[in-house]
Image (cartoon, rainbow, N blue to C red; front, side):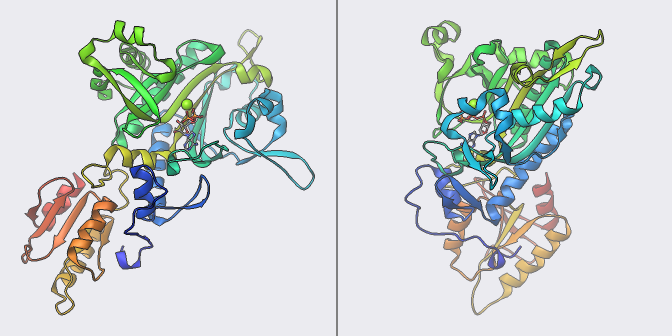
Length: 437
Ligand code: ATP
Ligand code: MG
């Protein structure tokens, strides 16, 4: 892509309404544009990053056998009345009525909808277990939308729902999801920590929030330093290994403020290992047994011919929030650096352009074609602008690799730079190797 043709409305001024770095950067680089409070349009650059995140989320859901589907954004109030949540949900739910005066709503989540689908067609234990997911817009009329897409009203979420015959089956499903989440965040270049969360009246220990560390996070967290050293690469997607994984994480204290008790923290974690900091919730998994299946009469026949209510769980990932969360986690020394897996482009070529001499630009265009032939997604900064301004702009854009074509480059050697590292002189093949590695 040529930068001159790309719609990235970069602004030099810091947007005054933005209080945190990710919000500033997303507005400044034209990734998003506010439409009304807490509602955003995703412009090409931002949308490209979000789609890459979405794909990684999707692949890891598919890897554990979850099946993708798509439920609507607008739901009928009837199913929410059945579950009893229509009144409970309160003002966060956007309620609307259609021309026949039927009560509808913009879905804040989909437990009712999926339970209705499931109960209408599954009657036998033989079809269990099942995991479904969709990636769809949600609306929650948050009291204080803030921090850009981090806490907004309309947001993009992956939500999965599981159906099992009994609690031991449901625990296995839960553990698979736990594993899929850790893998997903790892592929996004993030270190996520599962933290025990409130389970409400259901009790048990099957609710975790996945938190990534960031000074600007809204959740206060308290953790044993050792929990950060657990590597997920030692576990496999297989029953015993998954159970061990969850137990290994459970060994260490790691909670958000709603579960925090200072006496427990001091009792369980040595002073020198205590970490008190802030984080961003990027995912939440939850087992709730027959909460919805009972109220909505969703049952299956067992082998013995008994009717039982299916055991359900739900599992969310904030796909649009993740775009901002990655920025918060990665921004350093006034520079942005996207993880390779979600970067809008693999590499950017930055020629120093001189009105009277087109050598650098010609060279850059040739290199651009070569890199494209090698299946790299390349951005060429072909804009006639002072080189130091260009560098400032690319510090904001955060494409992880830069090729600078100026006085240092010779016939076959180009100045290659990975953000936050020293530059070096490489030829075409070496460059391709570096980027693909
Ligand atoms: P929070 O505690 O942040 O309000 P929640 O517990 O209401 O979140 P869930 O219902 O568990 O959220 O939703 C799953 C995921 O969706 C969250 O982990 C988060 O990443 C994302 N999410 C929730 N609310 C918002 C929002 N208002 N804006 C953007 N993303 C959100
Ligand atoms: Mg939550």
